[in-house]
Image (cartoon, rainbow, N blue to C red; front, side, top):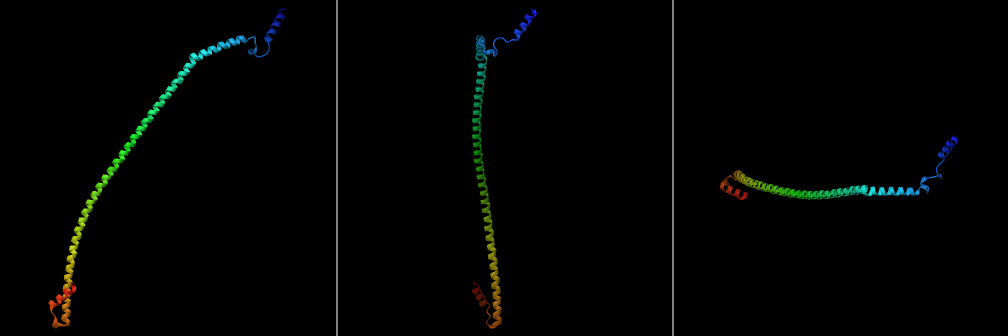
Length: 181
């Protein structure tokens, strides 16, 4: 009998308990499942509301503050960059103005020097021209005197060769002067 009892026990152990299927759907275990579900939800709610959510919200708040600080710093840097750009533009405009003033002053100095040199050159040219005119007049007067002398001699020689009796050097000289001008 002992062997039968052991065989029956094995057979009972091998046989599933209750109905075949999922134990979650067994209505006999629902009250305990609902109890543990409520306990798990309450514990999860407590963990989330007391530990996880405050940490998450503090991290989110810190990130929002960091982003706001970064935006404020970026705005400050942007303002400083705009001020620097404006200062650069002013300095560039001043430098251009100074460069134009220096260029105008230099042009005026160069023009004054050119005018002075032109006046000096004009005076020198005028002096040389006057001297040249004087020398030309002297040369012309000398040439005219030479022409007059040659013309007088030639006329006197021609008259003496053609009409030796009528030769009058003073008359010949007066006629040559009248003819030459």
